[in-house]
Image 1 (spheres, rainbow, N blue to C red):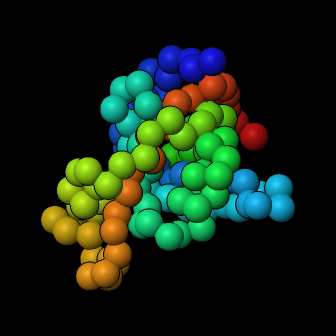
Image 2 (tube, rainbow, N blue to C red):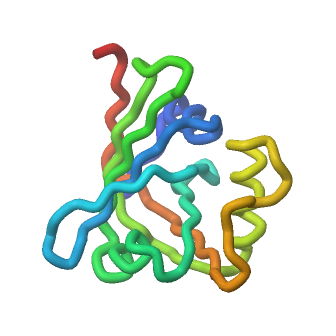
Length: 134
């Protein structure tokens, strides 16, 4: 069941916050990757490359967990569980460039290779916990 993202979490998602995305490996073990993250106000948006482990994992099992932390105030954080409800390459190259602007202040994503295909993961949040303090 999709839940609405609280205002504080939406703010964190729109800022260049640290985010770790956990996916499920074929053997059931967790796989965690730090990612750049965004939101359209309803869904959480992650961009990756086709063929990366997280992309292969969510094709098989769409369940994910996200840890989100404000880099300037580590007590401002959220834990989110959800599922990937859409994967698309349409607009993904433009989206990774927008994330590069958000996180690095540059106009184009500097870490890609010419042969990679970018893909956007749209995540529906099922549970959100906002955490304050340690």
